[in-house]
Amino acid sequence: MGDVWTTPKRIQVIGRGRAGSAIAGRLTERGLTVVGGRTADPHADLVVLAVPDAMISAVAQAIPAGPWMAHVSGATPLTALDPHTRRFAVHPLQTLTRSRGPEQLDGAWAAVTGESVAGWQAATWFADALGLRAFPLADADRALYHAGAAVASNFLVTLYRVAARLLAQSGAPPEALEPLMRRVIENGFELTGPIARGDWSTVEAHLAALHERAPDLEYLYRALADATRATIEHEH
Image 1 (cartoon, rainbow, N blue to C red):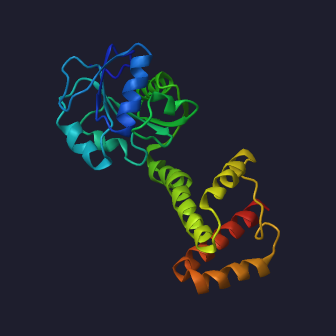
Image 2 (cartoon, rainbow, N blue to C red; image 1 turned 180 degrees about the vertical axis):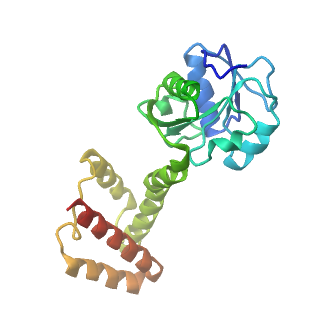
């Protein structure tokens, strides 16, 4: 079979975790024929692997050549789909949960990667079918890109938990942080606070309080303060 992309008539989504469930649900909403299963469907034109990153290679190797192959991992290179050559990747840049459905994909972007004209066409089509706003990502840049995504998503959770701990320890309600964090996003991530205005005496007061009351967080605060100052210097 040549390296040609045509709209698939039957799509198999292997893996029905947080990503796989949302993806299968969205494709079904779009009127596409979607099947599941853990082994290859002989009638599938496209097989989408929504399995843990460590399993992608083994699952791909167990599927006979023929259909287009894709994975939805952010960091995993396309070589994980060896020996298949008709392949691409689409990573929805969104945090997903089991408690919600395909609507989680609404408004999200997606990193798309291919190795041929047909591969890029396939990746772009798939992102569009999911209702995602596609942008191209070179395979060699996947790990760096995914590091950025992890900082924005995973570490946001960590920062909230750390901040909530400090508020609780001071007697303030942790839930009061949520409107603050939402407003930061609404304001386009405009930096405010002591570092933005060069108020280093307040920063030192923070560090002194942490040293006394939460010493295990002092290093984290210093690292974040240094990173924040670096972003200000970079902008100027």
